[in-house]
Length: 308
Ligand code: AMP
Image (cartoon, rainbow, N blue to C red; front, side):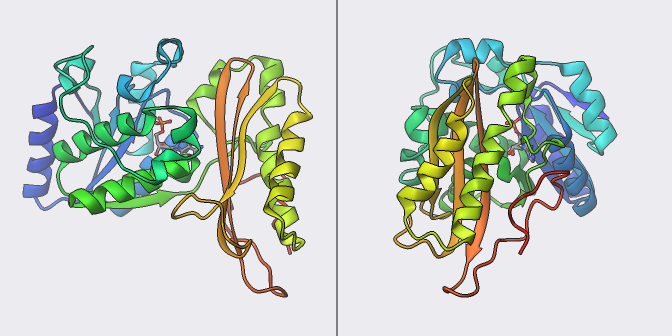
């Protein structure tokens, strides 16, 4: 295991690996690693010869300084977890290494238009510019590789795919399923910030998504009704403050013209002081044969509403 702090060393190390004929898997993270991150590393290790995990709490993607300060950090624990999951390189740069002009915003930033205007982009102004900028920098340093991202951050995944296509990065983006706790809560570094009562209330997010899935499965054709059902589920928890509960086209992130074909259900809510997001996918075909995408097989112990 090699812990690298310098951007140029990281770049050289991965160039060396490739020169030796090894295929590189890249797993960008903000640290405070959990099983969701570990699943990305394990998949990257299975599909490549060497895995580099990056740990960087990217200040550019936080639109709220108290959120940035509160974000959990655990470098030593993360290095151990990354190694245990199969990473050979951990790149954990100081902020000045990534952004020499910090706290001034760099002169060049990356903006992905369209799909960043909605949902997370609308709620967290500038968030996706920060994400796109740091991911572009990491890709520029890493060079040709496969990069592993979680569906947990579904809109982010779409932003990264657009960025790779539009800026011609030699990167293959690999999407990985969301890993959940036993009660369905999507694993997240932010879960560590939840109080015991918040943690119980947080299960409402996945419940609401399943309520939406069941409504679609039953043949509900009114988008507003599906949204309202999800929102009502979230609002049963007093500690949950709903930001959005939406059904969108998974490519454009716009509301679908018809509740048919491939759809994505997404929710965002503040639970106590902690903002959480989650999403699930569904594929509906025709009026008689409605079925749900067979994803998230890793979900344990929860009626997903996806059984036929
Ligand atoms: P983060 O450290 O939260 O920025 O996440 C780093 C990467 O891990 C992103 O690609 C996330 O989508 C992914 N990730 C986070 N939580 C999960 C999860 N529960 N299951 C799968 N991937 C995840």
